[in-house]
Length: 299
Ligand code: SF4
Ligand code: SF4
Image (cartoon, rainbow, N blue to C red):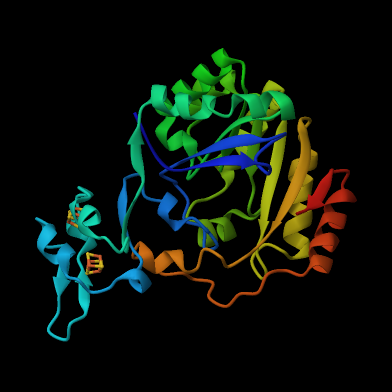
């Protein structure tokens, strides 16, 4: 069994062709710019869309653990730490202000969902992608899905942050055709500051995957003021240029679209008001990478 929070069909940015992407919950990183804050916890979690709430009060009575508390002034206190994700309150909320982010799914059921789009994979040269979160946080489920998809003849891609034990990569890589590898910062101290973990393991795993000869596509989120300076980009480029099987570097411009999701799951966003990098700056960064011999493009 695994816990997923989304299935995206007709995805065109998660590997070649038309793909179906399965998003798994659980991530060891907590990047400041993460646009899927609901992906970080490995468990299903309650989301509250305040703007949809009509104040009917049904959820206050439905919860057996007193998670929803009505305060004297009529507002709500949400005691998330008591929530056991039973979904009772979600089922009573006709306004759909309460949503359970994440659901359990078996390998068999997940593969059935992915098989539905097989005709599109065949006609477009596409396939399936496992993303997250970090798929290796659920390594047994991920291995099961990838193995079954290979048996179906699907092209498989793994989208990974790189921060997992190598023994986990050894389990899944026999069933992976393409690795989509995130790389954020060359300096490990800065990596700790902005993602919560150092980058040595990420660099080691990248080198080991490269040594296996698997095709790798690097994805770099470009965050103004954090990793878009020339020094970091050139250091990153030098690391990547040392790999034999990195066939492309895709630069993803920061956007703040995830900002509104944070309060829904009880989290605080740390980059409020940060503007996206300009097209000119993205092109400049791609140029810095290209000068190091990399195939780099800004999306
Ligand atoms: S059940 Fe839904 S609409 Fe009613 S008070 Fe609770 S969250 Fe608001
Ligand atoms: S999901 Fe269950 S435990 Fe959590 S708030 Fe709703 S009713 Fe309470």
